Length: 132
Image 1 (cartoon, rainbow, N blue to C red):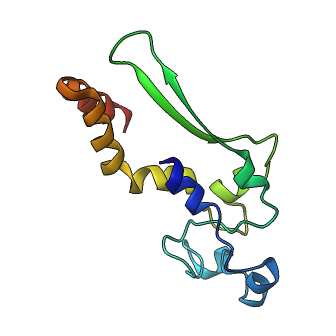
Image 2 (cartoon, rainbow, N blue to C red):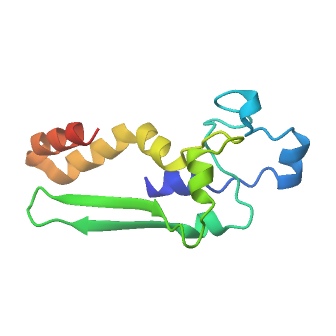
């Protein structure tokens, strides 16, 4: 998941000027997914690098043997604009780079959890279904 989030928030193939010259492809005027210049559409260009450097990843160990979590997020104190990129604005489409990356990588994540859980995979499957 970490690698996929980093990949989806670090495109460098277009500058802000080039995006403007393309008619602002992330504008809502082009429809709910904008004017698609990438696949998946929610990928984000790395400009100043503040959003990329604001990403954080860490594990949380729970109280019991069936309890664990891996947290992926953005420190909004470092990159307050990340919320507008992720959720969209009145004029810009949302590019949910966290939520969509989780959705697109769900089978891989589930497989890794099952490998870690081993014989406890039933509990992991129940927990993942409940989290959906």
